[in-house]
Amino acid sequence: MTGQAHARITVHAGEADRADGRFLADALLDRFDDAALDCAVLLRCTSGFGVRSGLRTDQLLTLSIDLPILAIGMGERTLVDSLAASIEDLGPVGLVTIEPLIWDGEWSASPNSAVISSAALVGQEQRLTVVVGSKPKVDGISPHVAIVDALRQAGIAGATALCGVDGLRAGKRLRASIMAPTAEVPVVIISFGSTEAIRAASDQIKTSAPGAVLSYGPVTVCKRDGQLLEPPPSTSTWQRLSVYHGEQSRSRGRSLSAQLIPTLRGAGVAGATSLRGIWGYHGDHTPHGDRLLSLRRRVPVMTTVVERGDGIAAAWDVIDDFTDESGLVTSEPLETVRSRAGHR
Amino acid sequence: MGALVWAGVAALGGAGALARFWFDGALSQRTGGAFPYGTLAVNLTGAFALGALSVLTDSHTLLLLIGGGFLGSYTTFSTWMFETERLGEQGRTAALALNLFIPLACGLAAAALGRVIGQAL
Image 1: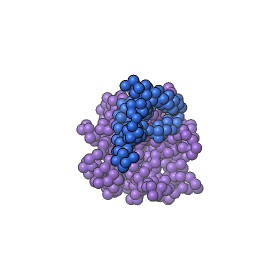
Image 2: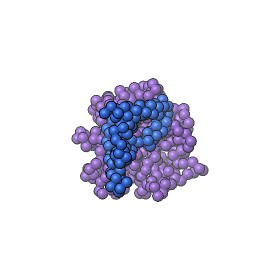
Image 3: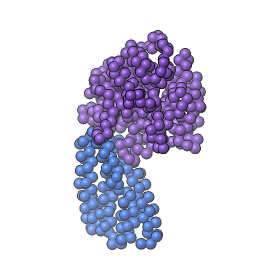
Image 4: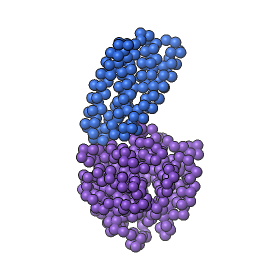
């Protein structure tokens, strides 16, 4: 229902963590399902570190044993709040963040007229988050490829599609499994742009991608293609500072996908994660993903820091340094952050 | 070879892998993960140890237990190749070349050094 206030909850954990006698990831998604959230995605990170956990990366065998995971849920505010309280008893859960969300619902093949009034989207720039299932293909094109194309046609500067391994949509559990490798899984497409461009893109997506779930949030775009637009707000409130780059992105010869996470850790930032997307584009490049016989991977990468105050300043110094040639840097406010390290 | 020796190989093989995970993991945490120093370290120390062992003992039981069992699991070829391939995926051609050449060159030197030290003892 789009009338009620909605929120997004993000839970950080390790993929090997266990609770309730099974994997914590499974327990979390079950709790999201029981809480009647509208939508959820479980994302597997490629590298990261936290207050309680050391460096983990899929570049090295010994550090890839327990990669970070993000369980993201979206639903009515009251349900999200009670869910957050209910997972306090799940021992190994790490950082939990909550942020308000402007919900545009799930669109069927014959959408109603615009449900969101223009007043609901405040600010000059918006983040648009679209969640779709990986199936069915329409005319041989996957839903996320069609949505990324729609965003590009609407003039949006960049979009990243991330593939989940588990999730919820319209009450249905979408889960990858070894025994059913072609099962439907959720795909999250994240993009940023001016409020008008995002609205136009959303209208296009609603007509071309039935079943897509859309939501919006406030964002400050800090840097784009090496140009500083606006530094992140240096307040004592929590922020999510994200860098959207590519597997091959470089800064003065340094590989962002290899060195951004270790450098953030060395700078004393409390935590960060990196996720590899499956499809996306930035700037003038055509949308791309991996090709079958290519050793070099050409996928988008999203690196995210959750911090505040001095931590954001330290993270920004590193990120600003690494994005002198390319990359999109955004800052989004977080309302509630609960960390096992004790600070709130 | 008795069943006891083969049981010993199995046990020392397990111990070797655990030693590798501990040493490789600790070194990788410290060096930050951008280059596979951990795998390089276990392979060089393992080559040195095997070089020394081959000189220090005539007993083929000891060579089997410690050389084949422990050092065989302590060192790793598959991880070396896997981590090199990952450097290729990231397009880091110089790092890939270094990760092929340095373990080969330094590995030969380490094994030779092991033999020399072993002979001196």
